[in-house]
Image 1 (cartoon, rainbow, N blue to C red):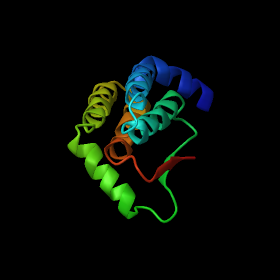
Image 2 (image 1 turned 90 degrees about the horizontal axis):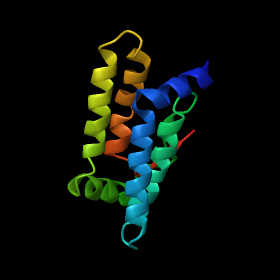
Image 3 (image 1 turned 60 degrees about the horizontal axis):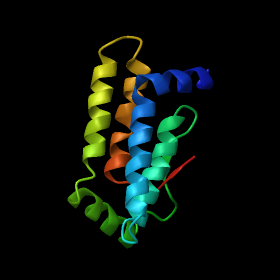
Image 4 (image 1 turned 90 degrees about the vertical axis):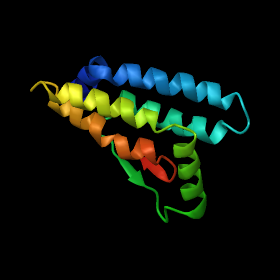
Length: 122
C-alpha cells in the first residue's frame, strides 16, 4: 500500500516539489556558504519523493544552538516560501476525497520545512 501511495503522491505534487528542492539545493551547493542549506533541501527532496512509510523526526539532543541559529537564518532568508508551497498543495488536495491523504502529507511537511535543521528522516 505504501508503494501505491508513493506513486500516486508523485502525481499529486510530490514530483514537482522534489524537483524544486533538488534544483534549488544544487544551486545553493555551488556556493560554500549555501552548502548547509542545500543539504537540507536535498534531504527534503528525497523525503518528498517517497513520503509514505517514512517520517521526519528531531535528531537526539536537538534543537541545539547551531540548529536554532540556522533555522532562524533559514526563515530570515525567505525559505519559509517552501512551507507556503506545501500549504497550497495541501489545501487544494484536501478539497477532494481522493486527495485527502496526499494533502495531509503536504500539511505534515510544513513544520519541518520551516525549521529543517536538527531533523532527520526515518
